[in-house]
Amino acid sequence: MLKTTRLRAALLALLILAVAGLIAGRALFADLPAPSLANLNASRPSTLITDRNGRLLYESIGDASKNVPLSFDQIPAACWQATVAVEDSRFFHHPGVDVLAIGRAAWLNWRDGGIVSGASTLTQQLARNTLMSEDERFEQSLRRKLREAWLAVQIELRYTKSEILALYLNQVYYGNFATGLEAAAQSYFGKHAAELDLSECSMLAGLLQNQVAYNPLNHPEAARLRQSTVLGLMVVNGYIDRRDAELALAEQLQFAASPFTVEAPHFVSYVEAQLDRLLGVDAVASGGLRVTTTLDLNWQNQAERTARWHLQRLAEEPGAPAGRRIENAAVVALDPQTGAIRTMVGSPDYFDATIQGNVNAALSLRQPGSAIKPLTYAAALDPIRSAARGQTPLTEATVIADLPTTFYVKDEDGGNVPYAPLNYDRTYHGPVSVRTALANSYNIPAVKVLDHIGVES
Image (cartoon, rainbow, N blue to C red; front, side, top):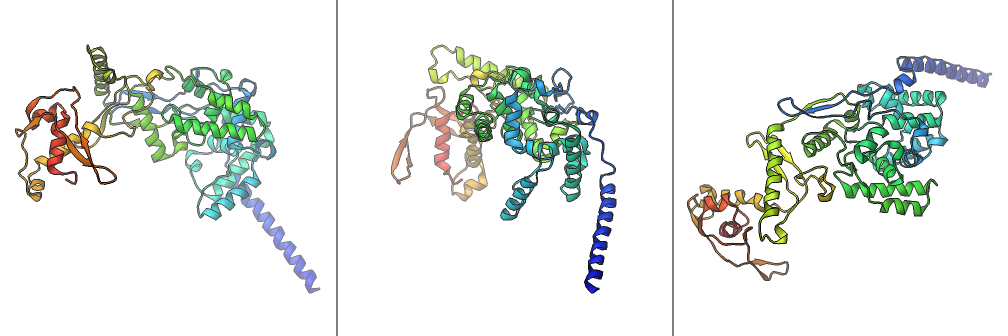
């Protein structure tokens, strides 16, 4: 009798929990929108980036001519296969939520003591990006995960896998402010999505994990490594063979000559990276941002013209050695009071592939060169620092001999290695003042000043 009573009590408790769960579930999901085509295809508002005076630098791709929804039949097989392979390899085997992936992610996160792996399927990503409010989309909570999973299952019940793939590829963000496969194809390659080949599809699919870090226009090596990973996963999942992957990886991709209308493109790309860091990729992809920057477009245009003029002058200089015929340049102008960027020229022409113009030379790591000279002279002119060294400070009128000079520096083994600097113009100018030496960026006087005050200064 006691056992029967306990069993009945347990069954009643389970019934109460089930009813409570149904009531709670109804309340949890009641305000969610229906996964209709109108909601799933909803366009995202444009993002505007302006200079400090409100002049437009860039408007994200949102016009109908570029962000065109594609049917599944219009999408190259290589594009959806690459996406499935790298983002959701079990896409065709789960009902919108992948229990195995959730278990694997939970194990990895527990093992490493933090979130190192997610488990969102393509369908969950689609639900999150199109059917949830912006605030909830970025919420890290069990409630959001449950609501997202519910929406994903509803989508799977209503649409075929092919339809879901098309909806996803029309809404996913590819960086460069391009949302959807058609916009991405035009932005990166200057062609329609239907014309993309395996190499191009695998490159675009690689962007989905991190649109900034794997942007082939700014980080070509990282993008190529990511492309290799995507192709490898396509081989593992049986979409292509190893020979196909090798040929696709060897292909020299031709990026669009002028993928989008933009002012100060290197700076706009820099702004996108900053927005991603500060707000997150999802917030940037959602669109609707109005970003006012510190750049001055008038200054920017003048800096671009000046950089091109100097390069042209060097190229046409009679008798100039081959080493002087440089093709690239960068300019950055900062407000010394605030550090605000007023100009950023990363190359003379962002869209000139022959000089890798899309690479922002202003951000590339390199030796400081002449940029360090003002710091060297400042230390030598500082009376307090000079007194601490037991030296008389230099003045702007101090004369330094710009003549052939050999210095000896220590190598890794402690030996003395001769170093004879040359000026950029390969000539010597005799006795010159500190003012003249710094204004003309002469190398020999700068090294003499450094030798005088010591590297530690």
